[in-house]
Image (tube, rainbow, N blue to C red):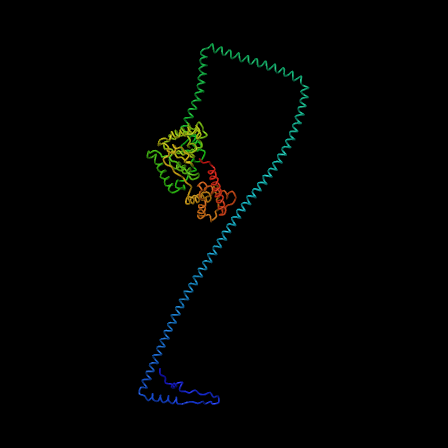
Length: 570
């Protein structure tokens, strides 16, 4: 660019001045200034001076615009850098916040874990304290009982000693009194011996004379009566006839009473083997007049019995076909229910028997053995009685393996009486029947006689309940025995933590339990509350009872397995 200031003089044109501190003016060469002034004059006198100035001005404006544009670009770049910096700072803040939140979450989780561990430790300490308290209460109760028994024993011993002393004194007094009375009486008897001897002789003579006269009168009367009877044949015939009629009447009345009793028993009674029946009987009808309805303890409906879904469906179909068999005139089907104890076999059979609308009779196989030689006759009476119902009858035999087991082929395996009872049973169940249905229940299917199994149309295995079934059973039994009010209207207050979650935990921990064991566990909770005098079933108490029952179950299981392991193998 051009500038119109003082002309620039090259440094080479100015000679360096020697340094002289004393010469303040120095040695200045004005030739350079002269040449500059001359050049300016020549430029001003040039005809292109104005154009050169305009060109220089335009170049200066262009340069300023470029500088302004660069300034704007720099401002724009600064703005972009600021936005980028703000975006980076925002990202950093978000990352920092995310890291802070993650750290807070980790801290909260750790804090929650510590609180949970502290709570579990608190629960364990509380449970241990409760167990120690219960143990202390038990020990205190034992000590009190021991002290009470000791005190009662001391009091009893004192009373015994006192009674012994009193009895000894009384014996001494009686002995002394008797001795004194005997001595006095002996002395008096000695004094009156002659008088007594004379009186005894006179009394003996008088009694002898009286007896002789009585015998004489009696035999005289009998002789005269017999003589007159022999003389009068009509009176003799009437007497013999009367005596014969009297004897026949007595023996006929005895035989008729026996026959009438058997007829009444057969028509109005029930066989001795039947423990419970819906058929009307004379004794049962009289008993029902003075008691409540015989079906006051009605079983739950089949839909409320907790069973495996597949088994429940099969049993429902079989029950419906059993109920409709009498209506359709088809033979009844015999059922066999087997499985471990406490799995609902007896409950289901009684429920079907009592809710089917048919007559039912319930007996147990253990009642057959004590009958001994009368067992076959009673079995015959049972089946004859079963065939005389008009509505059809369901005969339920519980614990059937007690007399229907294998062993007929071996004299050592079964007694003669039981073999005869089994033969009588097989005789009456050899063909299909339209009069009665047979339901057998047993814990050991493999011990039943092959002929008995052959007579069963349907066989159902009742296994141990699974997790879902145990959960439903626990909820059902807790509502029945704990949540429901008692007989006197007394209710149990239940901890809020004893809920569905508690039922699930109990069901998971009680694997291998039967329905009866779960029922007994819930009854134990009820008994623990009533027995302790408390009104509330706490979670710790319920957990403790569950632990006790699990320990007992494991002990029983180990004992059974140990017994099986000790049995000799062939």
